[in-house]
Image (cartoon, rainbow, N blue to C red):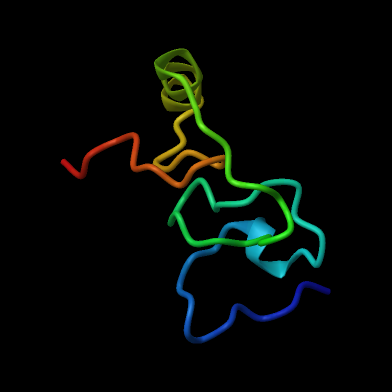
Length: 69
């Protein structure tokens, strides 16, 4: 059975519920989900790849990749 979402965080991305999320930032809301993963400097190529995967935020640096429409 899945845990209920934290009421303070309306994001439904499963990384928020993981104790050892494999990424630093949530791709949906940009919040830090695992501080133990180091912040990385990303390239435009990496950000382009993440946009093609429909990530709103970069999981490595937290930068917003897709603007709200």
